Length: 532
Image (cartoon, rainbow, N blue to C red; front, top):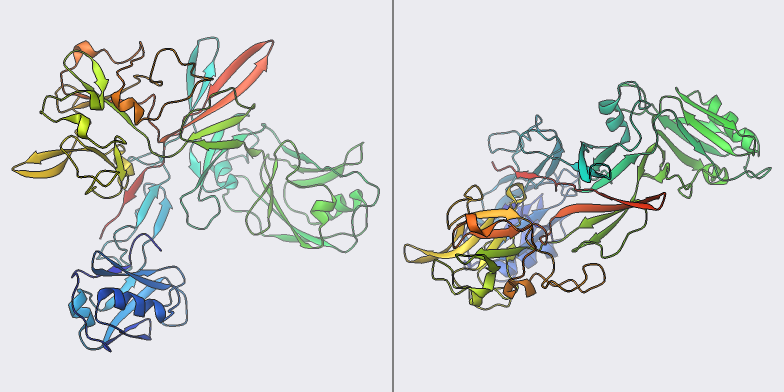
């Protein structure tokens, strides 16, 4: 089921009339039953392309995918809703009209989506704009490399681009050869299907792109087989038009000749002294190739098995040759506990938070005190902070909420962590937002490294890492914790050393018996929801 509806009724649990009808994208839906749930079932049973429905909290929600056909034949991701007979729309709080599905836009900060109710194609709540540039609270990736000479991390940038050629245009107008080896960029929408996905790429080398095949057999090719070639150009984010190349023989030299005969600017091929195919982009650009009959690229050894990682699979069966290479990542909710393989990165996924509270003297585990507001924190959620896209109505174990419970709103990633505390205000229990700019009063919060383990004896590398739930009743602190003597009783401490929702990486480089550890931190993408 899609997360956000295209249309949502405003009235709950109305009594409908069996046999009443509505139309959705020219298809008639006849209600079989008298409830909102029956209406949802009737819509689903109508099997309308790209359209589904559900009853949520007694209200009807209608969803559309990109396959919805508002005119009944052409997919446009829209719904045209109309009444046919009876009072279905009135009873459920629906309004007849044309509605576009929620959308994800991944664009620079200066390309504002036109989704407001006054725009040509309004979009519903739940549509997401991911700013791909750093301005105005947009995407920012920070890559820090450890320098053993200074015993400190040296910061750098990893801007976001939609693909290799766009990165080349923005980072080197001459085509790519001037980009320093070891530079980074982050590709967004990796599969090019409007999904919020990211991949970190590192520059393999400066200078020209040179890729050497894996096959040097005498006659591995099949004559007359075909493939296409495209390439990047200087100061352009667009690849050249695909040119078809045809093999004129069965040798590796025939493959090189076919590539050269295609006459794609800056692209050439040769056979080295060991008999292997060598493909070059003189400007250090990108080459995209695809087998169109037979398997000439595989036969010539131009595959993802090339150990330099300069060849990778693209979309639509493309093969991408590039000096932008992707390293291996491991998703985990905790940092690696042993030295990783060289050039391996770690993504700290999921949501975890260790929050401590000041007791008037020092920082303590959240459930170990009755705080200055009189809240018995031992009764708060047994798992600790509640992570939810909507305001919780019960604790994680389904028991009743209490004052002092903490909630992080995971729908508000732009302001992460949007942290709320359960309190009684004017006689009513409610969620109160913690002011992250308040670093001085009992109602405020500070962010800092406080601890990682739940004791001072367990080995961080070989020992068992405690859960954040177990830290709720632990008062253990590392020696570099924020100085408790300068903060007031009741203030919260968000322990950044043990809380997740960030990206880190480890790279082990061994040279002259010296092991260096490189850490990569990537700030999570920032989302801005656009509402009409």
